[in-house]
Amino acid sequence: MHTDIEIDKDLCIGAGQCTLAAPSVFTQDDDGYSTLLPGAEDGAGSPMLREAARACPVGAITVTES
Image (tube, rainbow, N blue to C red; front, side, top):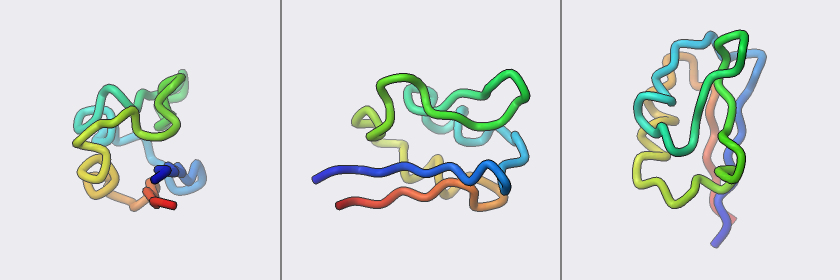
């Protein structure tokens, strides 16, 4: 199974909840917006990946399995 993570940059407000919940997957860019860490495009096996998506106050993170 493959995990896809999408971050809607138009919705992201830079709250940082994703980086707090799953720091092995998410970071914030120079402008403070959410971005994936290099090599973490599939969630890096983080058990907190879905929690990070749920924690986003504006719903900018989508996690799908294919």
